[in-house]
Amino acid sequence: MKNRYKASGKEKLVIILVSDFDPSSESIATSFARSLRDDFNLDVHAIKTTLTFEQVNTMPDLPESLDVKEDKGHFIPWVKKYGRQQRGYELEALAPAVLQNIVRDAIDGVIDRDRFNAEVRMERDEARPLVGLRQIVSDMLKTIRDSGES
Image 1 (cartoon, rainbow, N blue to C red):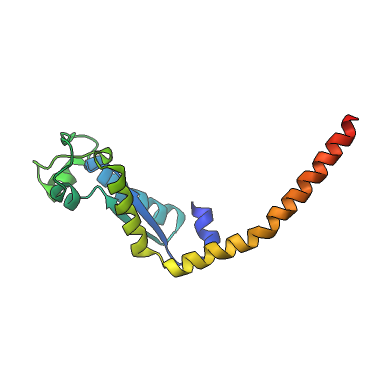
Image 2 (image 1 turned 90 degrees about the vertical axis):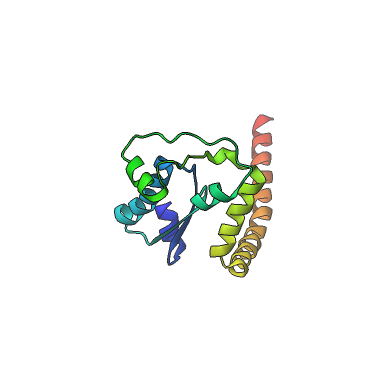
């Protein structure tokens, strides 16, 4: 990820995170971005899109929640932020279409769609001559293979 980001020439690495809503997952979301920043000296902007406190408290159709485990030192910050009674939820509680919409909205919130589409068109245009070249090479290799079999 670091190498691809560095090669891209982009100013900032934007990471869209999806995870459960529980103490460990909340901690991982922040520590992952911090690790990329500190360990690899990257300019990281992490966005946790799912599951968030707001989502679990405004989505009435989420299935039964989970008891929050009091382990790994993540529980105390969780309680300070959300309260002892806050329950956890698994990401799988969301319907796939709902998750897709949330992630799509998050991407649309950080991407320049016109610029992205222009890059996709440019890559497609650059790849077009390679398709013909690949066919020529494939035909040549087949001819070589066939002549060696006779």
